[in-house]
Image (cartoon, rainbow, N blue to C red):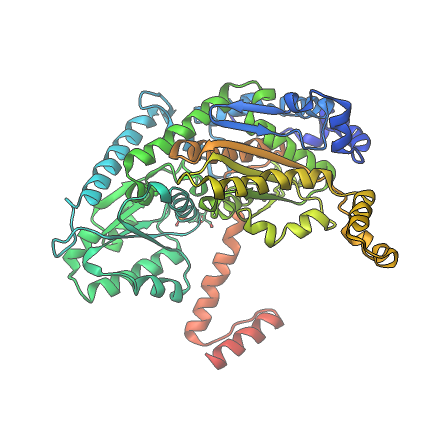
Length: 547
Ligand code: F6P
């Protein structure tokens, strides 16, 4: 079944939400707490090792009810069923969207074109496991018989960001293998990595769903040339493996078909880390940890599929985001994990969110008349506090933020962890409460600041507060909880796409620049600048003259 084409603004919930917004736009979260003693109890969700407190939002019970009504009116329930059952919901590419099948139980049955995809998924998982164990144990060796010491993931976009993010996030669980990532077509990137490598002991994992991506093919070619300075063509088979749907192109590149880990067109690039695209993750942390991550994601899938919407974590986060994006006019959302391990979470979710929902045409083929795709950005706390929190606290923009923290630190250093977490709690409280004129004045009084100086300084020291946040508090960063966390955001993206009536799983918007780059490359190679706009011609001529 295809997803329906309901324009959300034409639902009765949307109209009620517009009216409700006019009543809520000036509401104070602090006052909402005073009005309702049971607010925290109402606005938090507990599931497995996760607690989400969303009471520090500009919402009341009615807001939530109307948002839930919106979810019902756009047919979210049946959309979720279509998503998990392998319906062709990526209609512009005529594909199912089944990254969730990659983490389904071994015994699950999910049919695509009449055959159960779990059969192939289970086979590929066994291949990943065997390969991982052989590399880690040293049973599989390089061309001189030495065990591998380094692994290089060559890929870009979804074939890079997921593995990079997870390898960083699960560093604590890492083994002895050094893992590197080459993504940018910038030659300086690949050369910086190459200089750290020994060809005898390095394994290259070329990851490209299409195997047509300029960056990945260029980097793989450069690396192969470098490798062949020390080894023979035959040795390539021992050192290069590929992950792709395009076996023909992989073979043409010279990679042995036995060394190919297949994936499928129903896995979107930005949701592919659960497939063989995660091979580098498995190599870095071992197959059991990779599998633990899949298990955690599967548990979140089950929660998303079965929990009532008012108890459903992805649905709740998605609805809150719609509330701010579409009614308050918030353009971006900050993502602040209070752990250095999640430093790559924001870039990862930038692709997940913005490539998925950065669309302006509805599923009915008509331009949308409302805002879609939120802008995601963020950095780990506390670093972020010293970088951009000024703008969140006192700037002119409303920036709803998700704070993600963990109860237990991995090395058990409670001194550091308590300091970290005191910042975590303090920031959401400060964002909500702000600091009133009276409070600032009282501080001036105790500091003995002169009346003139106090008068001048006062407006700069006031914090208006009322900045909404969600607090996601997780017991501990493990492969399982990380899997659940990623799946939580994946499903948030899905819910928003359904409500916004857009196709979340294509990415036509990245094509135009690629096409133009190809024709400009030709002009650079032949040193003949064709007809461009004045600016581009001027820039190209400058580049060609000075290179
Ligand atoms: O940037 C566009 C895109 O198609 C992404 O969606 C994808 O993750 C990335 O390029 C890499 O594509 P591939 O895995 O086919 O090399």
